[in-house]
Image 1 (cartoon, rainbow, N blue to C red):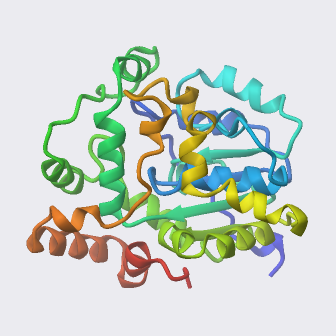
Image 2: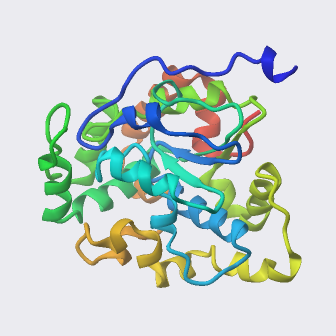
Length: 303
């Protein structure tokens, strides 16, 4: 099938809230080699950005990944500032998004890497992210002009209740999970889309890195490979967290070390009841279908 025969995704709506301003994509001038790293959130986004940076820059030390790879649809700083900064970049660009496909302008020439993660693991990571956010984080999201909808509030002290609210209100207080995953799953067979899973990257990071490199047409210099791999490990990223965290971690108590937290799965198993686990799994199957729900829970390849 040629590019002209493919039904490429089309933007059908805007998504705006305390975090999002999807209108930024309407004015983004794509280059043919652009890379878009997409996730729901807390699904390995920063890790994937680190991997891509290391592949592009052949294991270079001290890359300012958070600045090099901005969250394009985050509404702060304003889109005019962000678009000008990205336009000025001379290296191969790799931006991130947390939007579903139908809120993006989709380029047939760009490459899209989507990373999934079990929603329960996402919530545990989100809770750390949200609980440790400082006053500057709330001011930036709630008081910067242009916010659509209600402000984001502070979380309670019970992660179990936080999970229940997130599940029952479909992503509250952030944004819906199911539509995000469904939208990317639906286009997984497009030639410029690669679906990966957090658990698979943890099980075989080197294999995942080589898969990403092949998909992005980035040749690997084997002489630099061990350094690239070392720079993508959790220990390295934790030790150099200020390079990966937005604004060097300035929005979180404890700084960048809080933003790069544990990177582990399954913490919910010791907290949720059997009924709560079953309710999540039933909801995932109903929202995503059996194949997609299984992939989101376990990884193992998006066939």
